[in-house]
Image (cartoon, rainbow, N blue to C red; front, side, top):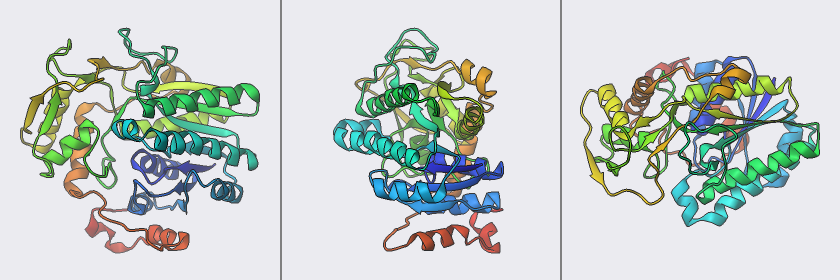
Length: 366
């Protein structure tokens, strides 16, 4: 199968591209590299022994999207591309609505032009309304509390309407909880720009010496240790969910929704403890005031994904922390700086495919 992956050079996208290549699929990536690096795909190529084709382009460039879609003519699309920081979305809501919602409209229109109607969409558990009834199931009320979550909710509603309007579409909506970890090799992982917005990458930067301490926002929540509890899922498990969804959609028409999580919660203190064990030293932390909008506990029910996709999370918090530490300790500065500049598509694809014997000396082995 030929799969086009938007945002395929990013954190979750690169792991999904690796699994797709290892499963024997042909892969094309559409990415503007604004929050990712072609180095991730070069390493994916080294590990998989096969190369994705990279198309540089923006979701807001509808002409470029249609050109690529008509050129590639994929069997299916996995849509990771989009802005994803909750805090930034509050500061720049229009940028999020423009990029995420309008960009997805452009993608759907490009798919229709190429007669491609199989799509897996990267959604988020942030679409759910705050609820005291846990774990959250797919039919729980939706009412996102921030612009980022609302863009995901608007896209979900748009895809629902699209599926109703035409019996031609096969659409899978995957609601993630908290993706963490890295590939067990330590070759690819999360490389956030600036100060990390999420807990695990911040902890890993403390462990490697890039940050001084972890801030714990509140220790007076009604949870088992007073800190917030969330559903953390290993990025490799998460990536596998997309392959399972693609397989399901090959045989089913309509629109489907699945939670991807472990089905249980882990506290902030437990995450710090797991990472401390992974890196071999107690990591410093400081208790500070709660953040506005944070809730005590949040985790989902992944039963539907298990029953319909045959998928379940295989890795626990200890493995998530160990794999994240291996990635961060081998790559303390992430992928490093890569300036796109005047590089052409051909230049970048040659870079990705430029796998040589010297890779073993740079922490990347085939």
